[in-house]
Amino acid sequence: MPQLKVLAINGSPRAEGNTAHMLETVLGVCRAAGIETETVHVGGKPVRGCVACGACGAHIGRCATDDWVNELYPKMAAADAIILGSPTYFSDLTPELKAVIDRTGFIAGRDGKRFSRKVGAAVSAVRRAGGIHTLDSINHFFLINDMVVPGSSYWNMSLARELGDYERDAEGIRTMTRLGENVVWLLERLAK
Ligand SMILES: Cc1cc2nc3c(=O)[nH]c(=O)nc-3n(C[C@H](O)[C@H](O)[C@H](O)COP(=O)(O)O)c2cc1C
Image (cartoon, rainbow, N blue to C red; front, side, top):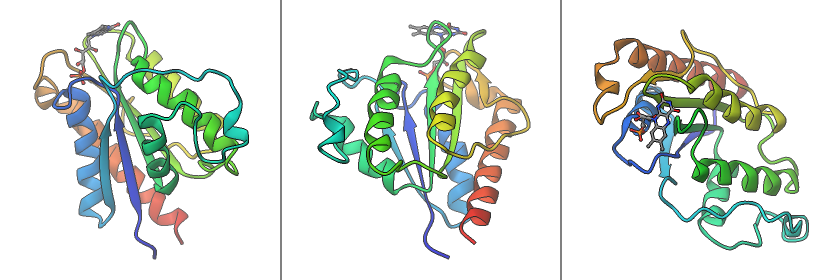
C-alpha cells in the first residue's frame, strides 16, 4: 500500500486553540495507523479572496494572486485526505478558510479535478450555536469537488470557548477520535 497522507488545515488564528487540538486528535489516530500527517495554520494570514480572473485555467495548479495559497495547494493536491477545521465565527467559517475553499476549489477544478475522490472532513469549535452551519459550509466544498466524506458518532464539533475547553469536552474528544478512525478506515479501503 502506498504511504497515505492526511493534511489538516486550521482556519483559527489561534494555533493552539480548540480547533487545532480537535484536528490533532484526528491526526493522532491517523498517525497511530501509520499515516503521515501535517497541519497548516492559515488563520491570521492575509485574506485574499478569489478575484474571478480565470487565470487558473491558463496557469494550471496556480492562482494569479501569488501568496500562501499557492504554497498550500500542492500539499492539498498531494494529500489522500484533507481535514478542514474552523472555529465558528458568526455561525460560519473564518474568512481565511473561506479563501482557501474558493481559491483552491477553482485551482483544483482546472487542474484535472485534483481533489476528486480524496477523503474530506470538517471540524468546528463552537461556544454555543452555529457550528452545524459551519460544518455545512465546509462540506459543500468536499461535495462539489467529488470527494468522499466520512461521518462520526456525532456532528464534528466541540462545545468550547476558551483555550483548553476542548480538552474538557469528553463527547467532543470521542467524536474527533471516531472521526479519525473513520478517516483511517476509509483511506485504507480506498487504497486497496
Ligand atoms: C469573531 C468571533 C465570532 C464568534 N462567533 C461565534 C458564534 O457565532 N457562535 C458561537 O457559538 N461561538 C462563536 N465564537 C466563539 C468561538 O467559536 C469559540 O471561542 C471557539 O472555541 C474558538 O476556536 P479556536 O480556539 O480554535 O480559535 C466566536 C468567536 C469569535 C472570535
